[in-house]
Length: 171
Image (cartoon, rainbow, N blue to C red):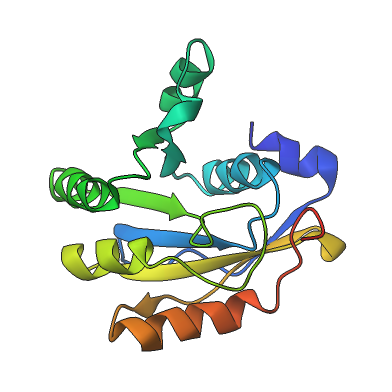
């Protein structure tokens, strides 16, 4: 799967965080369902087996089986607090755990970030690594990690990084 990057001429800029085995990758700008595939290919290329939150409605057979195989975790959007608790619990059980979240929560780039990634990172004491898609340059940029400090400050910092990106589809 990671050879797909080579065939499509996509590049990876930046590096994974050194010495950190548990963290949240916040991926933006989320403008297409292909974002999931792209981030999955990038992280697999880097030797990771990440988890990703996907709305529970997508987990119907046979697609649901495939999504789970590739790290998909079903999320009930009507009950986001239960998802935060479950992710924190899963992270505590493992030595390594990388979670990819698209904090916009939708495929239209509104610039408004949902705070679920912040709550997960804060409750589990994890670093946040922004990753941005630059479709015009066929590049995925991995940015230095951000500490989950105050909510507004953390969301603003990630949003400012996302402003640099150009998603796969015009939003």
